[in-house]
Length: 390
Ligand code: RFL
Ligand code: PHB
Image (cartoon, rainbow, N blue to C red; front, side, top):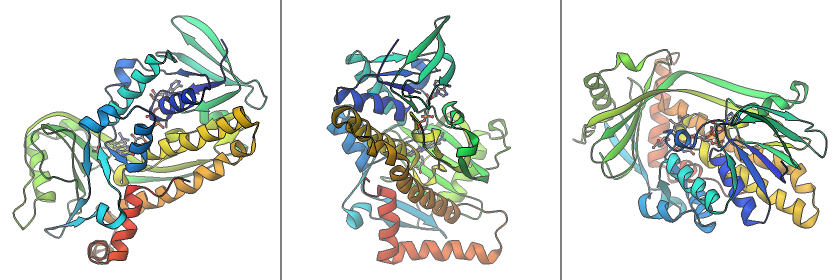
């Protein structure tokens, strides 16, 4: 089998790239190790930057998101028993949309299938070959048969656990990593929204986040030990912890409901450079991870493939190689900004076991600053809504 661009992984990065290339008349094949049902039901991100929403809308896959997603113009910061609002739209003119990642996946899969795009699920034993030549290939197994895909370019969109990154020789790679000594306990709840906007809470017992999915399903998280187990957390214990961390002295209370999903999510910051080796390019979580506090991971995956699709278009339409050669450098500028923001917000909001009482007071001082100084609020807001596309 032959195609122009071979894409490994049908997450947001791989599917959106395939969609953008199709709109430019460039052929691609997407190879995914999981089933369609699995990728369409994995619970992950919720917050889409306006730039992400605009791109999905402009390219014809935003209809359901517009109808079912919720437009938010700010969020709340809860600390020291009070709640303070960050007015995203007042400060930046932009907003965010809360729409679940697996719904974005469903919309992109539907668009690829409607366009008769090649999308192969449940492939295994994926390996990359000849990435330094102009005719690279991907070998894999599908429906019991060994296959090979010949292409001009391979794009590794296979997430944090994928195989593509390892096809870049270690001697040419530099990895940067920070693993945090805490995790998030995530729950899905049948309940009405606690608040009109997301609530990020800093409490001495630990961080908590109240997000939403719809008028009757809510998504909430609280900081826990990475070694903890969901079995240790009864519903009563979870609600006691959420109330302790989020309820305000001003009388706001978290609204409880039936908890129907619990999971624990590890947190790390990671960047792998370079993102290009010969005809292989990495995009999204395959190259970089952020802790979810800043809600940046999916949005970064989208901005990577936006840059990459333009560079591939330059190659196929105008014989330009320079945009492809600059991809890694261009993408990394935005990636490092988001890495810093996610790290900063994580450090400000979480209980840090090694923090002295002095450092804990600094967290509170910083929260006071971003909720009272217009310039500090602006800095937080412009990072949260997403810095301008590169
Ligand atoms: P994905 O989504 O991991 O997709 C990679 C795909 O590749 C497949 N795969 C392979 N396929 C073939 N062969 C192989 N050898 C393969 N190995 C893997 C996998 O099955 C998978 O389908 O990566 P992608 O596309 O780069 O997208 C990244 C985002 O998924 C991720 O950054 C976000 O979910 C992060 N994130 C958030 N991002 C936001 O922008 N806003 C948020 O509000 C937000 N909240 C979150 C989050 C991530 C979370 N978790 C679970 C880590 C909240 C949470 C709790
Ligand atoms: C979510 O709704 O899942 C969500 C919201 C904000 C974050 C992370 C996750 O920062």
